[in-house]
Length: 215
Ligand code: AMP
Image (tube, rainbow, N blue to C red; front, side, top):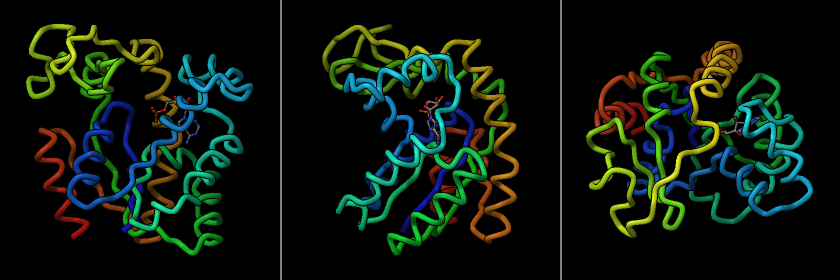
């Protein structure tokens, strides 16, 4: 089973993906993670992406496609995947279809996690993670709060926020998302792959709604 998540930044795609990975053994592919890994590697390509990533601008379609294609060609992908953060525009959706055809794969479901900007912004500004073990938290959400403010529950390390999770960058990311998303939703609706998931409740409620669609 291959799934695409379409959702505003901070909608909880990461959380829902983890739940799907755990229960159904799918592989989570986040193009944001692939790009951040490239930046962290210190490669020339990574260095050239740094500023754009930090300001919330989209990276060029060619670069993202190349990184994604490399990931899709790895063996573990046969278990099925969840694509998170891609496609973000129609060109990327068309390119993805071509690559999947070449690799003899297809998309089974496109899940749109529907939520409004105020709620998404609130979640983004509360996001924190542990630089040591990678565990993620949200200081504004009861279920995701660390036990001690600003400290990782497991390793007591100081928690950090992503540089692009500030109000100004979030506005850019959300507005870019809105501009590009509607055509994508139309594209996948036309292909009969789209399901709209109400994402205003708790993560468990959203996950139940997702399962109703994919099972
Ligand atoms: P995300 O983790 O999905 O919020 O992505 C973080 C940043 O990575 C975005 O603000 C973009 O700069 C870049 N990015 C991730 N996915 C894509 C994509 N499909 N196309 C272009 N840029 C992307």
